Length: 213
Image 1 (tube, rainbow, N blue to C red):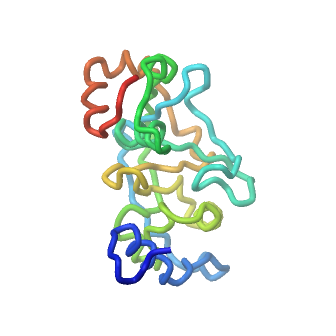
Image 2: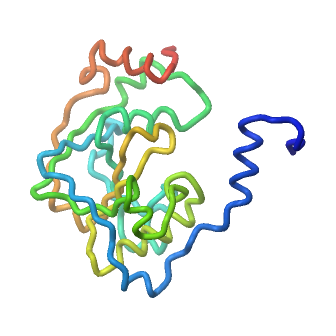
């Protein structure tokens, strides 16, 4: 417990967060509201880093990830707008600030394109204010995030998924895509992480100050 007369950023942040009211939960009236939608052009190339021995397109419903279905009645695919976003989600989620050379051969890069513009619920910009939500949906309780994912999925606005900011690098935009969008995607395999980035891999490690073992 932090003493009130000893200042520290961690202490103050914890105190402020504890004083925030509980995040709003979805209710039946939410379906009468308009979704804040952002349209991402079909020319955009989405990225995913994944284990090479698994298929790149995977819509999971394990409830282990942030925007998985609360009721496990639909699957979710997680993509990043840039490779950096996928990198931090795979390699920067633990306290260990290191990776091994073997991992760069075990993980592959895949590029996703869509046949039309994507309709995503905007949790990465002004959409939060428009829907009376806040950024804790991308940083707080998975249970709350999954409740909202369920509400977005069931909303008559028929969004393809959710656009949000990475908790580990808020400059990176991520997407949680609902399985009803699966037919929109084509996938191109870009090789192992090592092959795809070449020497650029070391720039990425330097950028996030991650050691290579």
